[in-house]
Amino acid sequence: MTDRRDDDFRIRPSAPKDLGRGFIAKVLKQAGKASSGKSSIRRPASAGGGKATGQRPGSRLGRGHTAARFAGAKLTPLSRRVTIKTLLVNQQRASPQSLAKHLRYIERDGVGRDGEPGRAYGPQTDEADLDAFKERCADDRHHFRFIVSPEDGAELEDLRTYTRHLMGRMEADLGTRLEWVAVNHWNTDNPHTHLIVRGRDDTGKDLIIAGDYIADGFRHRAAELATEWLGPRTELEIQQTLRREVEQERWTSLDRTLKREASDDGRVRIERFNEPKLQRQRLLLIGRLQRLQRLGLADEVQPGTWAVHADAEKTLRALGERGDIIRTMQRAMSGQPRELAVFEPGDDGRTVIGRVAAKGLADELRDRGYLVIDGVDGKAHYVALNARDELANYPT
Image (tube, rainbow, N blue to C red):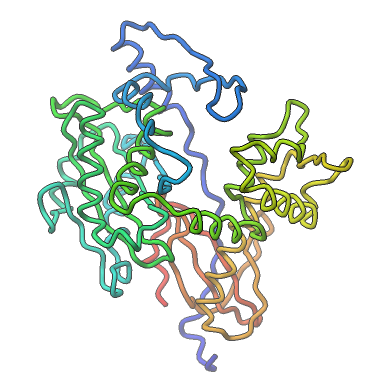
């Protein structure tokens, strides 16, 4: 660091505010009225093991609930995997500049394939007019934000065409044309697409999408399309992916399998791994249990019987976030040795003084940013910002 202090400042971040959940309930209530107010809740057995699971209230209300029942029927354990994150934004509750801010962030510098700014596109244009899209959305009650992340996104190459095909399938499932814009991001280990879908259907009415389509149907369509484009995963690819998961300090697909195979008393019995559907993963699942034991998250209560702690998922997800933060800070400091610290918002009035070494988005759906501060105390501090804080206010 230089001796200059012109760019030093004091920051007192506040804790993010709770935005509430009333709007989603209102949308579901209106959908219930549109369907004569009649609804039924089925409790189907899960596909994996016959355990009864209650369906979420309202999951079948809205467009796409029928398609959600059939989407994914072609998927197998060899199918390509896609992760989709979703946020329904109530524009009456959100900040007046919420959509504009989100559109600005997803087109920011450095997210393109070669480090250039992102380029928005739409169903039929490679140069979407985001200002015009924002104006058309101004009086809408809500809009949808999606992040579509194919596991093998780098192999898809033409994410733009993939996204257009995917949205075509979504339109067919929902029975309406959709107005949307998208930006592809290449600034992470796995390329992904940011989608913003207007909250109106092609008749001008509020677009209400069934919860089960949001939760599963859309993701299943994305996985079907990725599998059609790339072909199924090979057994070698699957084994390599699972082997990497054994030692990871985050929530993994192996952990989901262990959770699914646990008996009613919460115990995992190794003998279940001899069943045909799990036999190829047997050693990997045992290795994962042993790793959880070293992390203090599981115990072998008797030979061949394990108890995974009730808070294991929460802890592993937190460990994953911590690992992401550490990697972010190490990149920001360009290998310079620093003690790493995470700023925890509180009422003690503690301040962090230093230079902004890096900034970015910790939550790209909700536009919550972060700063990495090269502190005058010799530490690198990670500071999570409030959703209403503008990154532009913190020059690097």
